[in-house]
Image 1 (cartoon, rainbow, N blue to C red):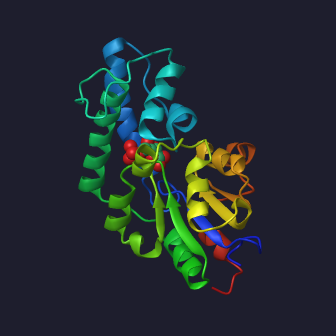
Image 2 (image 1 turned 180 degrees about the horizontal axis):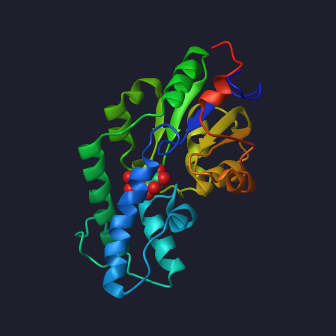
Length: 242
Ligand SMILES: O=P(O)(O)OC[C@H]1O[C@@H](O)[C@H](O)[C@@H](O)[C@@H]1O
């Protein structure tokens, strides 16, 4: 059913890049922030490879820390309420968050229609549905897009902070969602577009990991743990009665 193995009863959807076209919005906000920071230090600009390898899919402060480490830059952690000009992990993260929220509020958010159809089909089929995202902006994005009505459970960047969960590529956020549905990981499918996300799906022993390739990284998604790679969730509906 819905292109999934028979034992699957739970769908765990990443948000940015899987349900909504916001991976590119995050990437642009990261570039705006990091390029301003790097220019001051005479460093080379932030690239899309940097985004995919060090930042995509991870909680905000992990993204800042892991990218800076790739350039041999170490900054103090600082505090979550650091001002945007603070040269700390949290300060840079806050500057990026301001940029992403500005973009979301000015330009709006596009939903992938194949994903909206898939969510509706999963609901009609009686599958449980959670959004598992590293983003602390998940609730706002689900609300402005009207997708919140299809989602029973959210494990997101806010949950990660309050419940002290390890972010992707650790499997903790996906495992938390499956557990809240009373399901074994083998009964759950993970839908992910980020390398860190499919890695988390593999590490958690999930029954199936769907890699969603929006940017031409199908091979890398497979290597990092995807059971199958599609370009859009609508492909999984083709040939289905839904
Ligand atoms: O900064 P936020 O909104 O909490 O999001 C954290 C991360 O959330 C992930 O979903 C995105 O793939 C990343 O690009 C983003 O950086």
